[in-house]
Amino acid sequence: MCGICGIVDFHNQPCRVTVEEMTQALFHRGPDMGGLTTFPSCTLGHRRLSILDLSDAARQPMLSPDGLTALVFNGEIYNFQELRAGLTIRGSRFRTRSDTEVILELYRETGESLVHQLNGMFSFGIWDESRKRLVLARDRLGKKPLYYSWHDGRLSFASELYSLIQDPQISRTFNEQALFEYLMYDFIPAGHTIFDSIFKLPAGHVAVFDESGLRTWRYWSPPEPESALDFRKHVEELRSLIQESVRMRLISDVPLGAFLSGGIDSTLVTSFMRGGTSGRIKTFNIAFPGTSHDESRWAALSASYLETDHTTRPADYDLERLFPQMIRHFGEPFGDSSAIPTWHLCKETRKEVTVALSGDGGDEIFGGYERYLARRIQVVYDMVPQSVRSALIEPLIAHLPSTTDYYGTSLSKKLKLFVAAASRMRINPDAVVPRTFSYQEAKEMTGLDYRPEADPVLAVARQTAGLDPVSRMMYADIQTYLAEDILTKVDRMSMAHALEVRCPLLDYRVVEYGCRLPLGFKIQRLTTKRILRALAADLVPPAILRRAKYGFQVPLGEWFKGKLREWAEERLYDFTHPFFQRRHVERLWGEHLGGKADHAHKIWLLLVFNEWFRQFGRK
Image 1 (cartoon, helix red, strand yellow):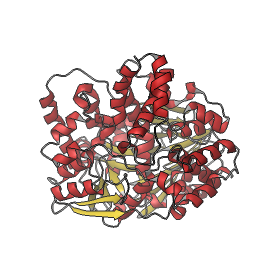
Image 2 (cartoon, one colour; image 1 turned 120 degrees about the vertical axis):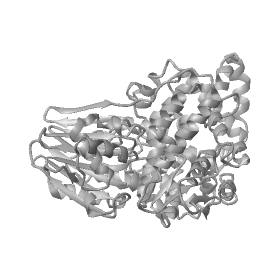
Image 3 (tube, helix red, strand yellow; image 1 turned 180 degrees about the vertical axis):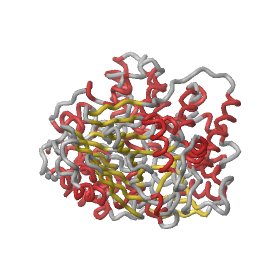
Image 4 (cartoon, helix red, strand yellow; image 1 turned 45 degrees about the horizontal axis):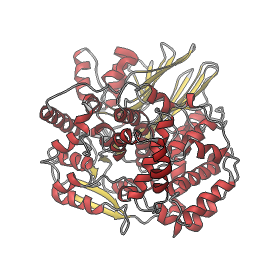
């Protein structure tokens, strides 16, 4: 895993000092070695975390033998050995054992269409001196990030936003549409960022920049469901595919372990690891003792069943110290509070291994979220006369007591979320991705204008209008929430500790297979992840198969009323920016402290933005 950056300027040779500063800002992503390469119109920078071929020969930027093509690459290509063998047969000669050189040789052979052959997580930049062009690409699911800014014959790019803004020529004009999207979704969807002139390259996209300008296009989309009858046949085929995906991700020249939460996905991945590694697998988990958010006992159960060398660390957060560091690594407002335990999980894991396998992706691909079940129920609920809903059912639910418990264990929270989601999707059927602040709340909080036609999340949902309501949610999640929330969180928090995280369930072949399955193979009545449960039946403890899903959350609601009250209040009332209306902030805080509502997540989003503005917004 690495950090990449560079500048292309067709009018002036890029400043090497600027690229050095951009590269240094990525040191945490690649502490093992770094380098720069300069051409008349391009300078590339790289920081390396050595995972395969630890020698200096694999140093980047990597040049072709003729010196006319240079590559900076972040990620891992799991089928590189197969690709290398084919290239060798066709005449390529290799100087290293790295997957980096395979990408370079594939580009020389096939150009930017090489992305179709890659199985892995990646973002890369290739400078082609002979054609005077830069090629940028991001993997199909968006596991690895890529930011860029361009104008008037000049383009800068980097793995992280903080690195990119080291370029003094980049404008940092605030993007009000992106703030509105952040308050609704907790993340800023690609290709937007918090700055008007900076963009994310979306997952599954390629971009080419030359003297004629910038062109981007999508090279991959998740396939749509197909009809199928033989459930057992598909169980066995999927089992073989996931097993192979795990095996490919065990290739490493450094120590390797796994995250183990005690859910189906991480337990299944760890179970398959046992057949491909020698000795006991090292597994890791974070605990929240005494709270409804704690699932350490389930992780311990899985670890005992699989006989792993398990480490659980209780949560003991110095949030005042941690908070500014986290915001800096994201570089823009990012509101998923599970970044806190992810930071600590990665920190503890990195003490013993350099690579960890994760169960990320199972929920989005195979129907694991309870809101997918709720969407089915909502179709029936919408048939209830509006007068009955508005005069009887919804007022009753609104008056249910509020609690700071984890929503998965709170019936009142589930019902309130259900009513809010049903209302949202009746107003706009494309609004299938969950929201923290509603449109109206975000409007009242900021006074900003919001253009729904410019919202990338709604654009994705519109593309799947022909699918059933639940499949629409899942496809939108794969292309927005998964890429720009879950995988962004894992990338930044793991790279903050120079830990590589691999996700076997997000092998694109597994994803495509899962997407093609009919919905009934994934969700049947009130059973989620039906096909994963079937193939895991002899691989994980029965209690794990029966347990309800838990999210990787923290008890913010309790903390804001207790040990974090003074800390949060001081930062919440920081109005050095003009975007939040004080009366609405005071109302949220007062209702939360008074137990009238659990506004913990909304408060967290405001705290994150205030800290981001303190670090980045004033310059």
